[in-house]
Amino acid sequence: MEIFMTMSLLTLFFGFFCLCKLLLQRRGQSCYMLAYECYKAKEDMKLNCDSSAKIVMQNKNLGLEELRFLLKTIVSSGIGEETSCPRNIIEGRNPTPADELCEMDGIIFDTLDKLFARPTSISPSQIDILVVNVSMFSPAPSLTSRIINRYKMREDIKTFNLSGMGCSASLIAIDVVQNLFKSYKNANAIVVSTESIGPNWYCGKEKSMMLTNCLFRSGGCSMLFTNNRGLKHQAMLKLKHLVRTHIGSSDEAYDCCIQAEDESGYQGFRLTKHLTKAAALAFTMNLQVLVPKVLPLREILRYLAVSRLKSAKSQKLKADEGVGLNLKTGIEHFCIHPGGRAIIDGIGKSLGLSDYDVEPSRMALHRFGNTSAAGFWYALGYMEAKQRLKKGNKILMSGFGAGFKCNNIVWEVLKDLDDANVWKDCIDSYPPKTLVNPFMEKYGWLNDEYLSFLRLDFSQLFV
Image (cartoon, rainbow, N blue to C red; front, side, top):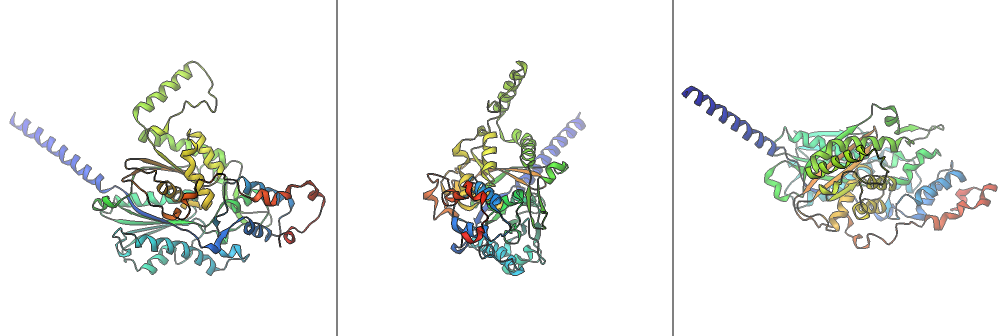
């Protein structure tokens, strides 16, 4: 009997020891965001209505049909007159290697300088992990090496360069960081997210490849993370859940968003008609994994009950009937990637979101354009500048990337946030009374029927 009691106590003690060890390990694997800085371009890089028209007219391959298509696209894009692009595009020059590096240095070093200047008590020499994601530019030495050289970081820093990941690359970079945090205690990490626009400007006339010129603009963001619980009091966000979905095994999905050459040999990024289908499939598959982790049990049970009732009555649901899950029972804020008006409106409708919910993404698109993987943080900055983010709130970040992939992150707000950040100079004017840009008012004459019967050199009309 004594031997049995002794064995039982030892078993209980061992079980208690394993549980405590597991809890301590999980505490050390937390991922906290300490700060972030978004890039704001100089005034001479701004793209208003007239400068955009001049850039379009630098392309001698465009005819009346292509100009009308561009006009229709930019009018409905949701982009305003305050976005920016690299100087070589504005000046009509082919980019040199120096231009390409200058574009990256301007964004990366500007945001990192501001990030290290913040009162976070983290210096460049204290960074253990560095992840940089730029999809369309991969020089040698790498961009991480340029950062290490400029800030004289330690010799044992772990560096990673991500390319070709598309508009959700910053979420993938954060996944890299959180997995590394499982192996390194009390570590600090930097994620730099931007895109190379200058060398990848499309100069042909294929409509499916001209869309990117209308949407993509200069932007970037640098973020500081830690798993050091001693710095939790400085943290603004805590990573709760991250789910990645990749459907690249489907040929349609793989080819729907791809870098390629057109028939004339001009390189660009082709968006096909299968893009929306691939996005819907990847998004649905991702939510099937994410939703049970973030929604309360009562909402899941309600959804199952309503779905079973509908199925029993053999009633075919209408697209807008709305018996789907109510994500607002577990999520307060929605940060949809500002890749374009169609993306924002499509995801907003599928999730049953209001205009208030999608406002941050719409305003980020209007003010800064599609800044690729950095776009999430401009939308987050808008929420913060509007003082929407309160302690305990949950934020869902949703984005897509070439390949084709969908990535979702859920953050928990650790304290009330009110920094105006990159929106400081203009937040009071947002949201504007209208998101309509002046392109149609100024260049609507391109749709006049009489132009179809004339042969004109349109580039001379804009001189």
